[in-house]
Image (cartoon, rainbow, N blue to C red; front, top):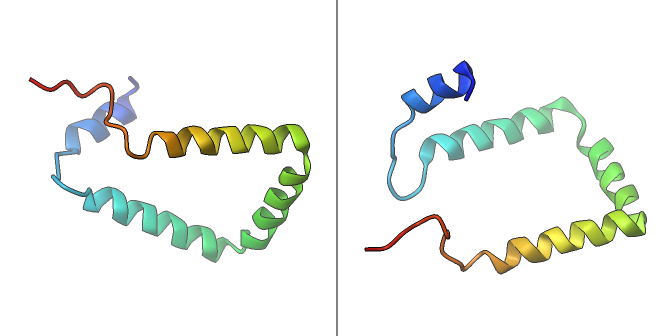
Length: 80
């Protein structure tokens, strides 16, 4: 683990149900992206990518995997 990740890990603490810090950072990143003016560009890229049959299938498979795991418990969590 590099120094940046070690420093960040040392500062993080368990926020319990729902991580407000992560939610705030995500929201701020989304706002920065919208302000960047690149939304339309990225939407066109996504539309073009869906036209690529191989890439579209890859994306659909990744989406299906994600949806299968929505209700599953994290396999790394061990119950006593």
